[in-house]
Length: 205
Picture 1: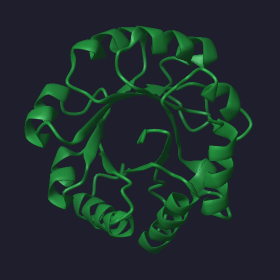
Picture 2: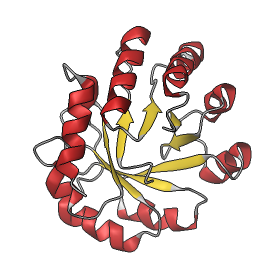
Picture 3: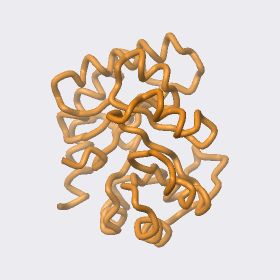
């Protein structure tokens, strides 16, 4: 199974109870991987949220990825880490995580895409496919053509993120991308299970 197909990135604004509800429903609807994100720097809160999601995912086969923090991933025995360009270098993270955990890396430019070829990562998060109001420090808007080109240039699986929603998901999927990462399309949906199922249907086979 392709774990990257429908990649949920959690919304740090959700309460722990709501977070558990959203993740449980989203997985029931077809989400294949969950990344817990906590940008406020509170490590205890991050561990609490990660453990809460871990409880929901136990027995589902859906991997838990921790955003940025290798220490938090190790603390909760998560399935992997997703790094940004300003986080711990991938080689150091791989050394700490060992060979079996997933390691992802955000890529925001052609130079970073090329550099990633020599790094010990499992997949790349290509950002941003489309500009969004929430991403104010955008380096590059890849668009569909840029995404298609990146897929031919990289030997790593690619997860597309940024401005993807039900209205453009079909076109994104047609590029052959390995997966799409979404936040609000699922986390802000009235019914996360229905939202995830609808997104899967838009992706086709």
